Image (tube, rainbow, N blue to C red; front, side):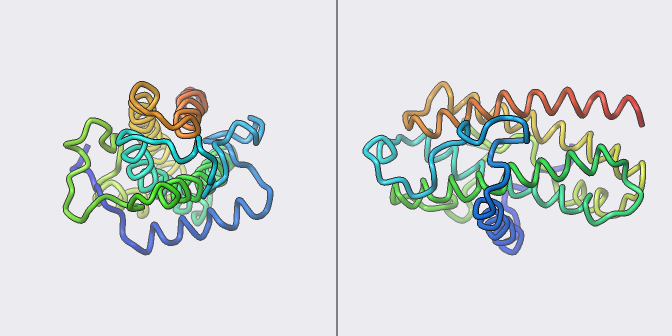
Length: 211
């Protein structure tokens, strides 16, 4: 894998946050990586002021700060696929589900950080990869350029391969939160990410076998 891109362009993250607002406001899918799970499985609404929401530790903060740009890249990758022609319908459907699921979670996690009085992003120059949580599975600039340039079946295969690695990284991050986090809503979201994205990894492997 090429060098990891640890900070997404501001425009990308801003676009993802905008998508989050639209998705959550429309009453659409709000679960991680799947449209089949009930909406109630998603973490608490952003900006919760309950006592439980106020309780958090460093692991919760790092989980949200790193998962936001991680999700934002997944949304960007999905947008690339949705803008292409001649992509298999089942791959298009997967990209749509990933975008619809992860954009609202960006808003949720941003709301948590604000309610905790924590920065919504890590300090400039901070190397996320040196932290225990890290941002595994992130695509490097070259990876993103290849996906952007690919077309048709080649693009579908590349998307599925890259998103599988991306999901595997998210699962590692979520499992770290499961074991170290304190905030119940953040831990619940982490568990949902593990369950949903493990299912999607299998789905992507099955799709790859048909292309």
